[in-house]
Length: 383
Figure 1 (spheres, rainbow, N blue to C red):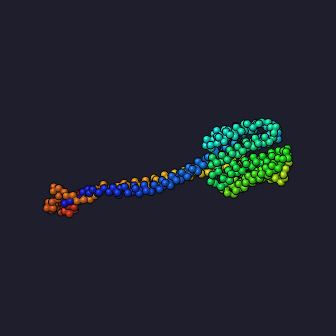
Figure 2 (tube, rainbow, N blue to C red):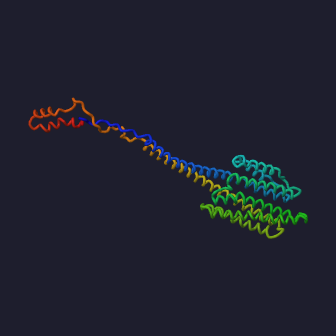
Figure 3 (tube, one colour):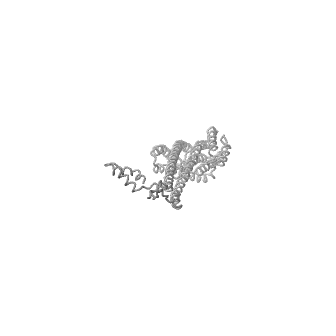
């Protein structure tokens, strides 16, 4: 007679154990590639926005320098003593910003050349006003070149969003150019009456060129700001920008009327209109820089959130795939569990039917079948 015995099951083959792991790795690989691409794009956008904020910081320091320089130029061309207090303070402010962020923006060389030119400007009106006009004109050209350098090296010129792109185009290109050229136009109008008759024809042509050059960037600035408001999803941009923009447009119209319709406008009238336009431009500059910096800061916050969500999603996906691989790779729980099999019992443990019959004959009446069944129950249970 036989009873159940442990039966050893065969281990899974090596291909059967490795295949689930290879499948999980095949799924992890494209997920890893997608994560790497997303992480790279997010990092690039984050770095660009960070550099752009450095550019905004530099532009904020260049604004007071622009105002002080054009004011000193007008004073010098008029033959009056130039107070360098405002100019020196603006120079020091730009120097501090250049020391802080000049390495990232690669602006040290440009600023060094401009600073040397600014510190060499006379603090008194020159005997020859045209010499003062030329000296300050060279300094203004270097200033505009520094504007372009900051705009390019900070990445503002490559800003991917329409609203922030139009804002940076206006604040780093149109507005400083319009301010410098408008002041230059007013100064040249002041110089024109004192020039010899032989030079008036050339001066008249230069005035016509300056009018077009000065009013063109100013009109471009208005178009840029309106385009920024129209393309922006921010509800605050229009409310904050349009009011100072309207004031700037009114001052621009007054300046245009004073300097555009006649060959030789009155210098005092044009100077007064230029000062009004400069004050409006100063107010508008502060608003544009604040709004541009706010848009960049919001973009950085959004990029940080996207990066966090991407990393969380990638971690969850990898954990799920690894869990699936472990589940498939691990052997079933009953792989080593005993299975029923036939085992031969030793002769001493085998029951004797004849002895069982004799024992049942000696049982009392009424006990036979039931007692016999009770007697063999442990043995049956063992089977």
